[in-house]
Length: 166
Image (cartoon, rainbow, N blue to C red):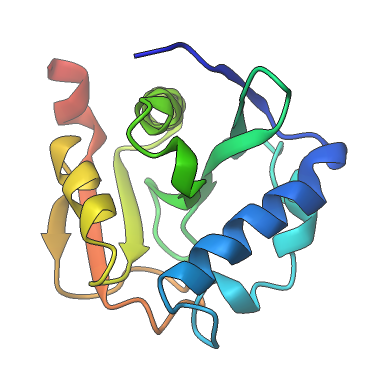
């Protein structure tokens, strides 16, 4: 597994990252209301993250192009729980290990501030769901907090304390 450059998002990354996310959403038929497609700040993620307890990282290839991204943000209305947010990977980078590097970075950060990590995804994102399960995320059958993504039909929760024990 090649090591990719992972760094926090900067304003100069916003438009390229928005395109990557929208391309993934189109690929999986999620380019509609009730998904990240409708997020008002999708093209301005550098302004959303960077507060205490919230971060967004991107992975770059050797040309400096964005391969993938992932964020951790607080889950509104649920104390001690964060959300893995907007984890997307370019199609040609899947299987390269870049998602593992991002997930490790995100969960290490999350473990510093939160006890649990929540995420929402879609049933047809089969490979992504397997990936989350490898990290110990367990499927739950109710939503937590108010994410605004009511079209996401699969939810997961990870006990970050158990992850620390591994």
